[in-house]
Length: 206
Ligand code: FDM
Ligand code: MG
Image (tube, rainbow, N blue to C red; front, side, top):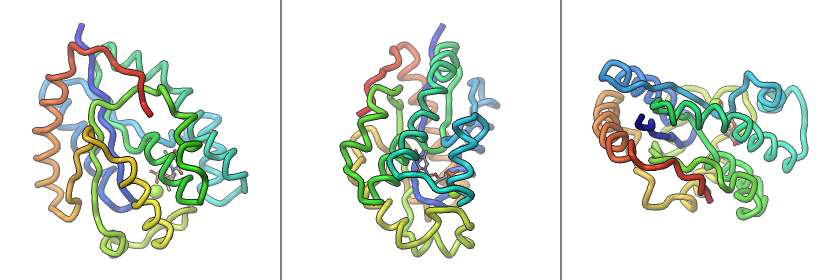
C-alpha cells in the first residue's frame, strides 16, 4: 500500500484557493488518484461550530483561546487524516496551521507562541501559496462580512505568511488565469504524489 500526499493551499482571501482545491481534486480523481478536498477550519465539528460563531461575529473569544481552538480543530482530525493518507488518499487541504500562525500573529501575538500548539502536526508534502496583492484580491468581489475580511488586516496576514515560507512552498502567481494555474498545479501534484508514495508521513511541522 502506498500513501497519499498531504497538499496544503494557503493564501489570502479571494486568492482562489477553494476554486483550485476543487479543480485539483476533480482532476486527481479522474486520473487514477484517490483524492479528497479538506478545509480548515472544519466547521462541522463541535469545536468547528464555536470557531464558526466566532468568525461570523456571533460571539467573542479571547485571542489566545480562539487560536487554541483553531489548533484543536486540526488535532481532532489528525487520526482521520493519517488514516486517509495511509490508505492511499491524497488530501488537498484549504488552509492549515500556517493560516493559524499568520492570522493570530497578525493580531500581535508572539509568532513562536502561535506555532507551538501546531508543532508535530502531519507535515505537508507541499504547500502551494496563491500569491496576489491584497488590493487586487479585493477587486475580485467584496470581502464578505466575516471577521478578518478587512484589507488592512489581510496585508499584515500576508507579511506573516511570507515569514513562514520555506523551500517546501511553491509560490504561485494567483493573478494568472484559473486554467493556467490549474494546469501547473496538476503537473506539480502528480510529481509530488509519485515522489512521496513510499515515504513515511512526517509529523514534524514547525
Ligand atoms: N483562520 C483559519 C484562522 O484565523 N486560524 C486558522 O488556524 C485557520 C485555519 O479563519 F479568515 C481564519 C482565516 C479566515 C477564517 O477561513 C475562515 P475560511 O478559509 O475563509 O473558511
Ligand atoms: Mg473566508
